[in-house]
Length: 255
Image (cartoon, rainbow, N blue to C red):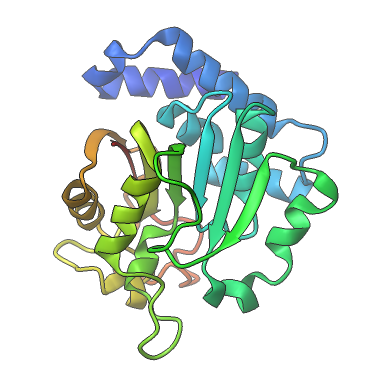
């Protein structure tokens, strides 16, 4: 748990807001995630990415708890799906969303992740970001990790993955009153707009916050945990010079 102790120290030193958060709740979140990370059925190839992606710190920052209902936007192949499923436990649930346009890229990855009922509290869905498959006011936390920039990406000519404003309206629709949105993404250059999602696969924190606030969400806190001062911000995230080492923002919003 040394990694978690370092995380707690950085949060306390860097944010007065952290003083108002129950120490018990922080430790509880971190312990739940830590146990999920060492679960015996977790694929070994997932664990290889932990040092870089820092899921323990990210989800402890968000305050994830056992029994939560989670909506995971753009779950991809399921790296975070696995962790979320085991963290919220059998009393919780995870709805995973991926756009249909990603089918050829993801292949059978999402289905294989939950095959044979290995993650029984997980359900996969295929929709765009502005038509989420969940009832109104049903979700405790929406997570959107390395995905908000997709709102500026077109998988084909004149084909989008969802209208930006409508997508955030959908997030608010599915969240319970007081529910949370955790947003993490690659940082785009200053003054760039949503189009950087299509060119660099990045987005500015301010663009996401503007959309979130316009939809009715409020910023709770943010973190520099995944910031990388050596990232020039103007290189695409798949550029070999920066791939896997991009600077990222982390923001928690509340409905």
